[in-house]
Length: 91
Image (cartoon, rainbow, N blue to C red; front, side, top):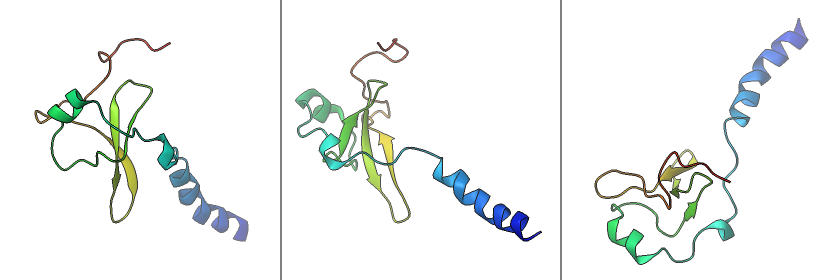
């Protein structure tokens, strides 16, 4: 019975650990965003921690009080900023 209860307590932590990949190292960030991107980006997004993901879109690193995660970089109109049209096949 003790083994079952230890396993039951451990399961939620293992599930949370599998939720997503860890943040990339700081060197993975774009050093200077292209001027057209800077011109359309909405305020209050961390432009010092931006990367282009496999989907071809820009994502920025949000560091909150509880977690650090990546959020799509959005325009002032609320649209994602991408280097290619969404739904286009990746090679």
